[in-house]
Image (cartoon, rainbow, N blue to C red):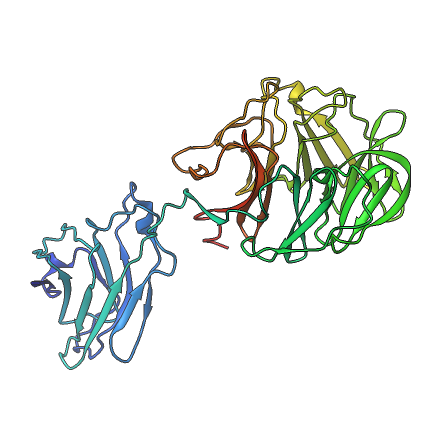
Length: 443
């Protein structure tokens, strides 16, 4: 391989374009040192504004950018800028397979490495070499990548299933209509079978089990059942019949109670406390999705989307819950049905919704004709008001993932986990994990 040298002859003013010096003296300096490096700014390539660090070493110094430049930033045509601690007698760039005669306006190819800058002091007594190592992100920041962690947690059957978080573990509870079984995993890949849960009533609908992170809750009739290990459940009599468990939000476990009509209530550890929020009878009691999140104004909010009403009708409702710390010291809870203002939202049941990358993401589900929605992902960037399909070139589930409903979606450590679910032919117990490439680059 031939190497060519790009020579910067600093005592000829014409060649100073692209180079700067911080000091000048009538006495030749013995300093050979680079004090700053950058690329000339180009509006079409914002990544070139990267900040470079100069690391002095006893042998070859290093010039590098801690934060990689934006994906796709081109380095094949850049104008380097140098600032020296003292005017050198000679500075040369060694670039692989490139020859360039400096005219003051030349662009260079920094996409190939290694690149070396050699500086000779003005009195020619000292020489210093720096390696220039610009880095650009090699992966698309807007791309979601998916991995199948396991194809099967348990032998295939038609059980109803639910996955929750308990401490540092995932727990899957399933029911075939006659008996319950539970499995746990620390990472979604390796699963162990637990003993049969005890203390839950006959006919338990496991998809209505919710978690606050350490304790599980299930409601049926005038009883709420709790467990701290998913195996042993304790029964607590409550003052109002439980229609369904909703979600854990704003530090409270929420349920839909029957108080001469629907009313949202919170569990205080021994009984239900009515909230005063009374939705219409057109409120889901099963196969809905629930998610809690913070609005940009830091309001604590939650949404309950889709599902079946008590009369069996498939819903397109999007119930918005919001907590405001004012005007009373206890705060105020509000509820609103977004579907009143935005009626064209598709009726969906068996969906999953999460908050991820400052937006809401919806997976799976079927419509009112039991047609599967597909593998596309719906997103909302305005807190659930409107929804649209995600960019399928950047954000799409893997081809092996069949369109399904009744899966569980959980976010942990900036990863999205999708567990099981039912497609047209079978109920799965597989696990997929996905991540936006740039989600934790600046965290």
